[in-house]
Length: 503
Ligand code: 5AD
Ligand code: SF4
Image 1: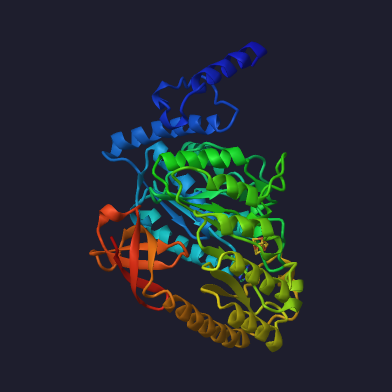
Image 2 (image 1 turned 90 degrees about the horizontal axis):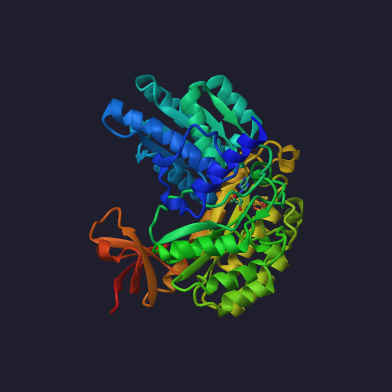
C-alpha cells in the first residue's frame, strides 16, 4: 500500500468519525472496502460494525437475535468491566440473557484473588460443555484476572478445548475485534497481554442500574502485598485523566445517574502516575462539585496512603457517603510487616480515631485475612483486639488462600487448616455480634435511602441503601427506584432494616 492509499484511508476514517457522537454511529454507513482504522476507540467501532453484519445474518437464519450471557465472578472492578463488555455486545446486537444454558454467547469474567474463585470457573465450564454439544454454535469466552495466569490458560487449552476465546485484563478494550476474529476463524483464540499499553476511552457501556454506576479512576496496583495476586494480573498502577473521569460522570448524571462508586485497587494513590500529578482528595473535591450528583462512594482505600486531606474533604462534603472501607488484613504489626502492608496496628487505630473525629457518623468496614503463613495465636489475638476496639460496622473475613507466584505462597510456615477454621469461626462470631449491635443503634432514626430495586422476596417492598451502605427494606413500588427518600428505620434485623417512608 503506498502513501497515497494510506492518506486516503486515514482521510476516510477521520471524516467518518469526525465530530460524531460515538453513541449514535450509523454502522450501516461504513464502507467496508477500507481497512479498519488504526486509532482507538474507532477501530473497535469498526469491528462492532463487522459483528453487526454477522448478527443480521444470524437473525435471518434463526428468526431471532443471538443471546448473550455475561457472568461476573469478582469484585466491583470486575462488575464494572462486565458492564463495558455488555455495552459492546449490545451495540453488536446481542440480546441480554440471564442464564448460560439458553445463551448463544457465554462470557465468564473471572476472578483469581482466592483459589475457590478459580474452582468455580472449571465447574461451570464442565457444566456448559453439555450445552455446547447440543448447540455447537454456542460461543464460550473467558476473560478477567484468572486468564492472566499462564497455568490457567494452558489448562484450558488442554482440557477445555471447546472454549472459543480467551483474553485478559489489559486488552479488554479489544473485545469487539476479538469477537469478530472468533466468529470469522471459529478456532480457539487466545490473546493475553503482559502489560497495559493504553487506557482506551469512550467505548460503549451498558449500566446495570440507570441511577448509579461504578467509575474506574485507576487500574492496577503497585503494592505487592505478599499474599496478593492482583498486582501480577492487573499490572502497574495507571490513573485515568481527571477530565476523562469528570466528563464520564457528567455524562452519567445527564443520563439519570445520582450515585457513583469511584473504583481502584488503591484509590488513595490516585494521580501519582499522571503527567500532571494530583491527589485523590483533589479529584474528590472536583467530583463533589458536579451538579445533580447526589452520592459519591469509593473503594478501595489503603491505610498507608489515606491522607489528612482526604479526611478533610470527606468531613466537608455533603455528597461523599458516610462509609469508608479500610482493609485491615491483620491486627498484628508483626504480620502486617511480612504482608508488606506498610502500617502498624497503632497507625491503623490512629487513622480510625482521626476519621471518626472528622466524620462522626461514618460507617467503617474492613477486610481481614485469617491464617496468613506464620500467624500465631498472639497475632490472631491482635486482630481480635482491633476488631473489638474499632467496632467495625461490617467486615469481610477471608481464609488465607495460597496464590502461586506470590511471596507468601512459598513461605514455609503455612498454618494448619483446622487451626485456621477455629480462628475464622471465632472472628466471624465477634464481627457479626459487633455489626449487629452497631446496626441496632440506628433503629428509630430517620435517614435518606436511595431505593435500588423491588425486594426479591416480597413484591410489596423495595430495597435501598443508606449513605453508610446499610440495606433497608420499605413498602413501596417501582416508582421509587432511583429516588432518595426519607425513611424511618423501624426495626433492625442484624445487618439490615425494615423501615417506612416519612413525608
Ligand atoms: N487469600 C485470602 N484473601 C485474600 N485477599 C487478597 N488476597 C488474598 C489471599 N491470597 C483479600 C484481601 C483483600 C480482598 C479483596 O481479598 O483481604 O482486601
Ligand atoms: Fe492486593 Fe494489596 Fe494491591 Fe489490595 S493493595 S490489590 S491487597 S496487592
